[in-house]
Each structure stands twice: as structure tokens, then as C-alpha cells.
Length: 238
Image (cartoon, rainbow, N blue to C red; front, top):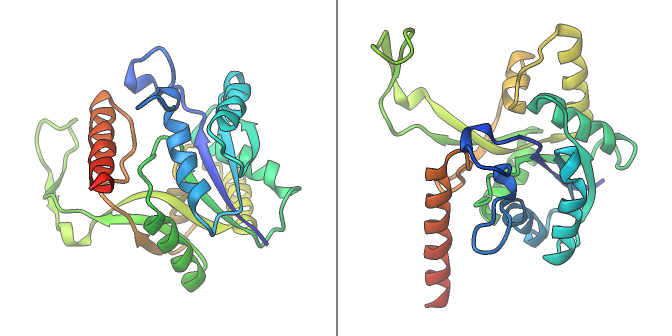
């Protein structure tokens, strides 16, 4: 059996307001998706990488991977209209390529600061419980609002709250099964696999995440990513 990183990069990035999707914006002369691929390329437990992307960017992804020596990239497939559909397209393509008991790590292509530790902990948690969802405790006080954030209904005790990140690690067979059940039950809009599993009554087991493992959604996030990247470089230089 294999361990495959399935990277989702099929979003159009409307929230970022740029001309190209955020996963292809260059930060330090390197596209965001390559920064992400490098984390899995470097990790000894990951055997292969699949990227699910916008159809018109498939050849670009392949060219970037060659340019940056991502030798583990084996498949680039077209995404769908939603996050859930894109993931399912990727899983269906893997179905004929790898054994069904293989480990699949679904990860946001625009979450490029994923560390070796996060990947390792996800795999370790998977081996212990059969699945793993990266999460971090919530440190802020959290309020619920039902009028678009004008006023609060109640506050939720933060020690009960966890913010999920990616990777989400499951066997291929479990993921395919969940997506087939979702079709039957008409669950269509879960961009996150953990939400889908929860909707299907599965227990979600948490592995360790990090505040640095941020998802690039806004211009602010790109600025934070740049700062983190440079801080990391400084530490390494000393």
C-alpha cells in the first residue's frame, strides 16, 4: 500500500481578488502550490503526490513540478465545481492506480506552511485510530451570532472548540465510501472531508496542527506567509 498526498488546487480564488488563482501566485519566486508540494516531496513517509486543479492549469502544474524537481508528482487531475466534487474526482482517479487500503492525505494546496511534524503526526494518529484530522485548540473567546455579526446570541466555551486544518488522513477505501454515501444522502457542499465524515456520523480524531499552517485566503494571509517564510530562512541561516 502507498501513502499519497492529494492536494486540492481547483479553487478560483475569488476572495483574493487577484487575476490568477491564489494557489499559483508566486511568493519568493515560487508558486504557492509548489511550496506546498515541497513539504510532501521532502517527507520520507509520502510516496506520491496528486494535484487536483483547474482544467486549464493542468499543464502549468506539470511544468512547475518539472522546474522545481517535484519527482513525487504522479497525477494531475481536473477538479469539479465544488471542493467536495474536486476531492471526489481525485479519489476516483486514484481508485484504479493504488491499493484500496492505501493512505490518502487530503491537503489544501494553498496551505503551504505544513511542516514535517504535522505530516508525521497525522500519519501517526491515522495508525492509532484509522483516521486523522489536523486541528488546533481555539484560543480566542468565541461568540455565536445569528444576525451577520451585528450582535451575539451566546458565547461557546473555547476549551471545547478546535479549529480544523489539513491534512485529513484516511484510507482510500474509507474516503471513496464516504463520498458515495454523500451522493446517496445528497450531501453536496462539504469542502472539508472532516465535515463530510462528521455528517456521516464518523468520529473525527485530531492530530496536531499549528498556527503557522495557515490557509492563504486573503492578501493578509500572503503577507503573513511571506513573513513566516523569511523568519524560517533567518533561523536556518544562523
